[in-house]
Image (spheres, rainbow, N blue to C red):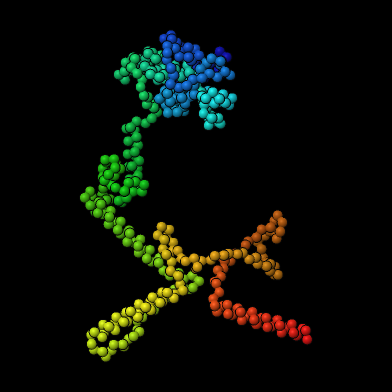
Length: 406
């Protein structure tokens, strides 16, 4: 089919590959604007940088596919080749990449990445004036008649500047708005927007993009009914939000107060402070004067305050400090262990039942029992008992030594 040359069937038609490009129909007018090797004529200049590859052809001009795509209005080469099946994609070899890096046509960071190329002539035949600096419709296109028919439908005339190009694969503004609205309605149906606040959304309901106050979509009736059921509307939404915030703050404060309890731990149950009730009862009885009763009551209160203060000072149980961000109660360092050690237990003389394996070698495996024990610093009484025991042990040793000598 291709006369012994490589070919490819595109949209039901056979295209021969010759000179690193698909052989397409030539146009006499177009050939006056670019030669066979891809050099522009008539003072025209490509937007993209061009170069030749001596190992492929000493004079044929090439360009990076990504540059051809972007200068033609595409965001990347993937869409460029997908939308233009007659653009023959060439994969640069490692020596070609090294050559392009050396002459400054390729970044060194692309040395180990895939790099695609395209001939300059085929890029111009596909997009003509779009690929040129200050390109003009029809005047700078290879296929003038085809481009003339296309621009006439858009209200353009031959010679008009091409200007900035929009990505033909980029979604339109209407499509973006429709997708955003569909996502918002999907979230509403899933129940993700119930209540005053929404996870991941703004905290103010009646601001934003100018849509309805009850939804991310135009006046969502379901969301409006849910909020109205809670008594919320455009006039009182800020008041209700403040009330909900105050209620949450009060609940959290209550939980924090409950967490502020004395630390029991090794000291056991926290002792209760003396209340002072029942003491000094009977004092003041028989004294009928009101001034004496008030004076006695004041003295009782002062005595009770002194007793409570002394009890707090002498209390052995430390009180923790609540850290609200982590919800942890922190305690004094003198109640926490400062050292740790591991003690290995001796093997028992009795044979233990094991699950399997051997005691040593490649088949050795077993279970480990680890006990954690916190040792309390010895008190003054403990030191006294220890000293007495040491002295008794010393006395017994001396007696045993005397018996042996005698």
